Amino acid sequence: MKTRILLLFLACQSIVALAQEKKTPYLTKSLSGDAIKHVFVNTSGGSITVSGAADEKPRIEVYVTANNGFTPSNEEIKKRLDEDYDLSISVNGDELHAKAKNKHDHDWDWRKSLSIAFKVYVSKNVSTNLETSGGSIHLDNLSGDEKFATSGGSLHIDRLSGDIHGRTSGGSISVSNTGEKIDLETSGGSIHADNCKGDIRLGTSGGSLHLNDLDGKIDATTSGGSIQASNIKGDLHTGTSGGSVNLNGLACTLDTYTSGGSINADITQLGKFVKIDASSGHVNLHLPKTGMNLNVRGNRVSADIDGNFDGTKDKDRIEGKFNGGGVPIDVNGGGRVTLTMN
Image 1: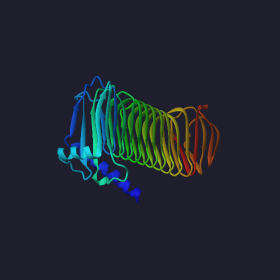
Image 2 (image 1 turned 30 degrees about the vertical axis):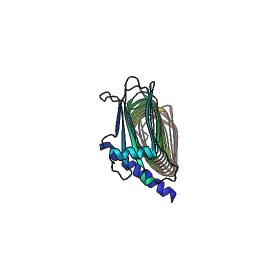
Image 3 (image 1 turned 135 degrees about the vertical axis):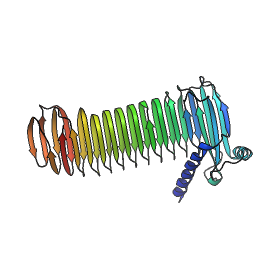
Image 4 (image 1 turned 30 degrees about the horizontal axis):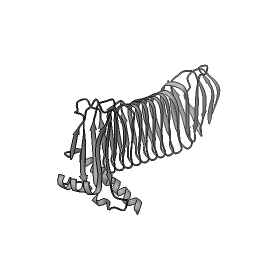
């Protein structure tokens, strides 16, 4: 029962956070954009936005909404903040600190709570450390090191460059136009990654993965969803414990697996190796005609090999060298395996 109440609370907080986008800020404080290099924000129930947009005046905005989705008067907000919350905003050297914390213990009536959200507009070269227990986090156009976490909201990331480390316990993740080092994880939502480059780690315990136009060392896994990827370069390690895998336009090293679905892979340019494991599903693999060492096994193997092949072809395996040998191709399918080349 307590778990259901907590989930309801987090859902309400997320809905309230969306409503705040169209509200007038309760408080706005101007900042010296060149001076701020580090942003620290902690709130117990609202969303957090940090933007390095050049066309925005440096400032921090505070949005306050009641738990029912309505915005009380400024007088009522001030009264409830004074009684029930610690709200503080300060600048210490090149650091901005903003905090909103409930004064009460966990047995306080959450229906009386406020959702307190922050929007921060600063220069591009800024690092962040952000945490909220119930809202989404938005980051864009920043070039510092970013660390952020939410217990119940989504993560939205665009045009970041640096060391990116983000966590959510129950929301989706969207990351685009971001590079260098990316480490993002959710316990229950889907992940969309588009036009990113560098050392990329993405993980979800229960959602799907959508990967498009990525380049680098990519490690993307899910415990229970499907995987879709297209236009991938570099090294790709991706897998799922319970869904299908569909990969198109790959020019990379590939290591992929599924424990409960099929795998379809279209490779236009080989990397260092190809490793595919579908323990209980079918495999459809399309390869370029180049030198390869083939080790393909399945319940039934069908291969369209038009070229110089030296090895063994049986109904359940193909093993040997194609065009003199070269890149290792290891495929294990629990069902039918179909291999084609062009």
